[in-house]
Each structure stands twice: as C-alpha cells, then as structure tokens.
Amino acid sequence: MFSGLSTNETQRLAALELLKREDKERDNVLGEFAEFARRLMGVSGCFVTIIDDAFQYIKYVNNVPLLAGCVPLEETMCRHSLSLDQPVICLDARQDARFSEHPVVQNGTVIFYAVAPIKTREGHTLGTLCLSESSPVTPSREQIDDFLRITEFTAAYLECWYSVGKIDALTYLPNRQTLLKEIERIAARATPEEYTLILFDCIDMSRAYELSRYLGLTAVESMLKSFATLLQVRLGLDAGLTLYAFSTGRYAILVNKSLSATLLDKAAHLTQTHARITGDIEIPLKTHAGFIHFVPGQTAGQDTLRQAISALHEAIRQDIPLHAFDPEMDQKRNHDFRMLYDLGEAIKSDEQLYLVYQPKISLHTGTTVGVEALLRWEHPVLGNIPPATLIALAERTSLMAGLTQWVVDRAIKQLVEWRQNNITMPISVNVSVSDLSKPGFADALEEKIFRARLTTADLRVECLETEKVLESPIALDELDMLKVRGFKILLDDFGAGYSNISYLRKIPIDIIKIDRSLISRVANDKGSQIIAKNIISMLKELDYIVLAEGVEDAETAEILKDFGCDEAQGYYFSRPLHPTMIPDWLSSSPQ
Image: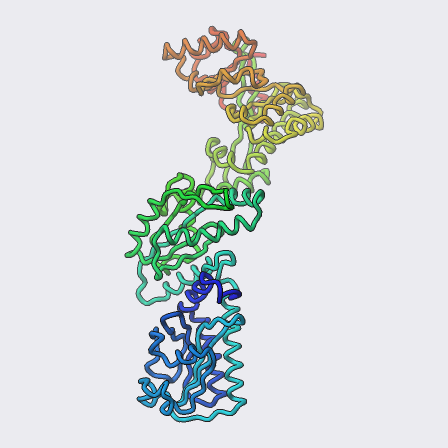
C-alpha cells in the first residue's frame, strides 16, 4: 500500500517508478475512468497523467492533440492544480492568466479545462485526471461532483493495483512479478534487443533466520531493508536502473546488454561488507551474483528467471562473486533433478530397483561365507544406471534414508526366502553416515530382524564414509548399539585414505575391507605388495577379520592368501549375482 508515502521517500519513489512505466492493462483501466468522467461532463477530451518531481507522464489521452509521452512539469497546465493541491475548473482558459499562454489554449484545442489531483488516502499526489473541450463549458455542480468522485475512484484503483502483487512489502521495491511483467513488455516491442538479467544474493537466509531466533524479527528485517540501499550504492546505480526485490535477501537488475559490461564488472569485484544489526552486532555479508544474456520473447520469462537463478546458485556453490548462465551445466543439473525425482518414484515401486549379491569367499577353504547386497536401478527410459551415479544422486538428499531402508527391507526379505530353502549365509548391507546419524537406527534395525524371525548375525552392516562417522557422536553411539545387539560391522574401503589407522579403536569394527585401489596393484607392484602384507599382518594382530575387495585374478588371490588375508570378493570369484542364481552358485562351490 501507499501508507506513509508522504514521509517515506523510498516507498514514494518505488511507487512512482512503477506507475511511470508502461502497463497496457493498467493504463486501459485509467482510460476507462477518464472516458466515464468525460461523458458525465459532456466534453470531448480527456487524459490521465502520472507525475513525479520533474515530469508529467501521459498514461491515456483522447482528443487532445500535442499531448503524449513525457512532458516537463513546468510546461504543463496541471502544475497549477498541483501547486494548489486542489482541483481547478476553468470555464474558458483564454480568460485565465494561468493558462492563456499555453500552446494548446492558443491553438484552440483546450478552452474548457478541468483538472483534479489523483491523491492517495494519505494525501500523496500520484498524478491528475483532466477533461477538456475546444469551447467554453459551464458544468453543473452535480457534474463537478461526479468528476471529483471518479478521480477518487481512480486513486483507489491505483492504490490497489500497486499494493496487490506489485511491490515487496519489506523493501518497497518492485517485486519479481513486476520484473516478469517488464520482461514481457520488452518482448512485445517490434524490434527486440538483447538484455542482461543479473541476480544478487546478499545473505544466507538460513543464517538470517537463525539470527532472528536470538535478535528478533525486527532487527533482522531492518537489516534486510538496508540491503537494497547498500547494493545500489555499491553498484553505483543511476536513476534509470531499477532494482527489483527478487526474493528475501535477493535482488535483480534488468539492463540492456549494451550497458551491462560496467555493471557486471562491478558485480565481479564486490568486496565483503558488514551489516550492523544492533548497536554492537555486525555480520559479514558476501554477495554472489549470477547473470544471463537473453532476448525477451525468445524464451518464456519464467524460464529466463530460472536460468538466472541457476547461474546465481552456481556462483554460490563455487563461492565466487559472479557466474554466467551455462546451458550445459544447467542441462546437467536439470537432468540430475529429474533423475532424483525418478529415483524417488522408483523407491515407491518394486519395478525398477533390485538387489544383486556378490559372494564373499574364504581364502583358506574356498567356501562362500556371505554375500554383499548391491543396489541396481533399471530406469524405464535410460536403462541401467551405474551404481556410483545412483548413490551420488541420493547421498546429499533425504532419498538416501529411503534408499537404505529399501535395501534393508529387501535384504531381510531375501534372507527369509533363503532360510526357507536352507541357505544360511549372512547378507551385508551398506549404511551411510546419514543413516547412522538418526537416533534409534540400531533399535529399528533390530526390530525388523526379530519381526522377520531372523537373528542379528544374519545381517551385517558395512560402514561407509568413515571419516564423517567419526564426526558424528550419534553415528558412533548407533554403531556401539549395533555391536551390543550382535550385528557384525564392516569397515569399508580401508587403505583408500591416509588416516584409516586412526579409525580402528574409535569404531566397533569386526571385519575390515581392504580397498580395491590397493588390491588391484598387488600382483604387479612390489611396493603395493609390501604395503598390503604389512596392513594385513597388523590387522590380524589386532584380531580383525580381513576381507580384500576387487580381486580380479588367481595370482592376486594367492598372494593375499599367503599374506594371511581371510576373505575376498571380486570378479575372479564371481560377479554380483541375481538372487535366483545363488542356489546354483552355492551347489557348484566348495562347501
């Protein structure tokens, strides 16, 4: 609303900036008010203006030649009404010294002239509603009252138009919908030009909300209000460039591409600043920006906004000041998002996800001592999705928990089926730190095992992301609870990082898997042999069961056996098998 415009310069200027712009729907409505007043007064001419401190902007005109566009306020007839702050009804402008020298009076276009300021409820003047005739007119009192009443209706309409969906309530700046409207207006031009849309992010909103928790909303809102002015000053924006409130803490600028180079250079070199929240509390603000060059009309306005957001988020992700929209990167992000959606749908059904099982072999007896459950995804359109891609998609989202539970439930179901067919070997399932960091994980897993009438020895837990586990007290507690309940715990990918040894006494581990990156070089690299031999010897002395993964040939298997390694898995022994193939595998393997 326009509340407080007479005392709030920022809000007043924001309102006028919006009203001065071309808006066909709004201006057509203003024209209808003017035409209604013209007919009631019984004259032939009418026009509606918006005024600022220096100019009059014609928004609608009918039958008043020479009136169009933007006119300096000092050259207008309406300035006298504005200076008096009241309506003026002039029966014959030729006889009035205020108007007699004006060109439209001297050429006979305007003889009768009526003007009333379009004023808000708070008394702020937005423009004027004017009527004219090329001869003298003497209106009745009723006609004058109707004219003034219509002017009030016009003001009320503009207030509603402004307040409903046009401005940001916090900063009083034109909002995102207004920006979209401006893009659409430019697109309607006969000769479209290339423009640049720049988005700025001034604060991490999660941090702002956290500040509001301690300081209150008023303090944080005050800080957010100051961002607009701060950004305008730092970018050196002139009066011809509009700053839009895109969303809370984010702003947008739309500029002709030919004028964008200097602005983009400033955006790329914005330094960190500080915002004072209270008298003694300041926070550092680091601005990120993303931009796109585009021709309005060639792509939908909403898609242009989305692409600018994509560029901004990439700047934030890379922690750089400015990033241009990258179609290839955007396409990849969109593809990943679509894949995430499809994965969420796949978890809900039994038609796409499935488990395969890779046997684990005792290097001493050659018998199968267990299997590892490995997740596979057969996408209905893209076919088989690589496991690494699948996990990379899910691990930073809430889908990871659903995926883990899907694997656990299917593995338990498979265990029950195998027990019914006298197959009694354990299944190992992979569990991430995000799963273990949920209090009650161990209790829930035990309950599922008991409900299926199995024992905790039937299901083993392979611990992924070991470094992150050590950073989570909850995850360490849950691993301890799993150990107490009788679950065997495997440490995955030992040897892949330099700090693995420090894990050994911090996590309750039963079996340690030596990473394939080390195992793959054992047969051909003397250094790898020495490292593998000493690692296995050390782990055995610490009473761990040692399992080597990624064994691809007989020579590697024999070397590992000689080093004292207990178990192995890899393509040399077997590829991951569909569960229906396990009975035949076991019948053909040593027992």
